[in-house]
Image (tube, rainbow, N blue to C red; front, top):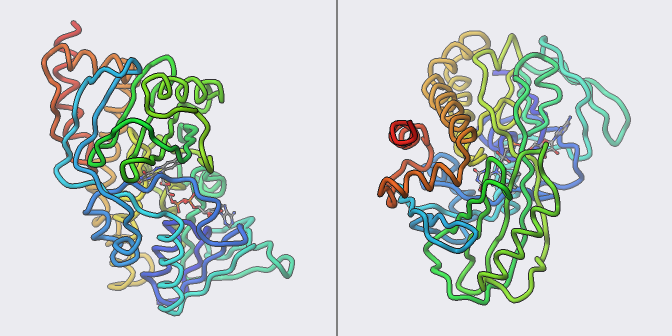
Length: 367
Ligand SMILES: Cc1cc2nc3c(=O)[nH]c(=O)nc-3n(C[C@H](O)[C@H](O)[C@H](O)COP(=O)(O)OP(=O)(O)OC[C@H]3O[C@@H](n4cnc5c(N)ncnc54)[C@H](O)[C@@H]3O)c2cc1C
């Protein structure tokens, strides 16, 4: 197996470099893990796939997700089949980088990849100016914008959402075992707000909405709502951070010749929640397994067999998400509540299973 060149040293690129010894990662930022953007909520299945860097980054865990409206009224309780864990995302990326280096992979920071071709050659603008490198394969793990992967036709134009969050001191008693999700179709437009407890007195508070309709005003309104509901006394947050959330799905041809797109850049993201860590982990697991067992075209054929089920699942999730978006997240939840469905068991990583069960019920009711 020759050298793998990895474009982007975020979660997906680093996980891949920790699995394929001798990879070379090119990251445009000066340090690994920063700036942070992600909440870091994952299932135990995801932690199992990532391994010890994920286990060593666990901050807290949760049993349920409680859905409320912005008047503070309970609408439903989601019951995932396994506990949900919050990871320290900066630590996770640093541990993955260390594991990659221990495996003999190299990580270059301040190294921006400006072009990639299908023969496995890339152009890098780094500390020493421009240079080229050639690998046996190139993995494009450049994140949500997907500039290079779209230019090469390895990804479709995905919908993007803006996600913003920060740390808040909580003044009301909260159940440390529950993540709170707030729905309001006027404030969140296609998405929702969240409050993730960190112990009994602190929380990560955030929201997302579509890039087209996002405004700082909506975030201020959401914080004012939480203050009115008594969650905090003042609505200022410590350390606000965020980024772009992908709402899309992978195309079948997200690889060609010597190039593959991975993670957010390829649309490996659960479209309803924007959670990318599970799909990207499964993709990296499939790709690295295929590469360990065979080379070149044979490896890609093997990879395509290994990843097929995940792609089908993400596409179904995308169709279901579009249906919920059309109805409105709040409205859909209210219809379910009106039908007496207030306690919903779910698979945290394969939303299509619960969606189709519920959408069928909602459509039947709203006719
Ligand atoms: C607000 C928010 C909350 C989220 N919460 C969750 C959550 O709770 N659970 C979950 O599973 N997922 C969550 N996600 C999604 C998750 O963060 C992403 O799916 C995940 O980070 C994808 O990893 P990636 O490596 O594909 O992309 P990224 O993490 O974006 O990494 C891409 C890297 O490539 C670098 N790069 C880009 N272009 C170039 C270039 N040309 N040359 C060199 N380097 C380049 C970037 O600097 C970056 O470091 C959240 C996202 C956001 C925005």
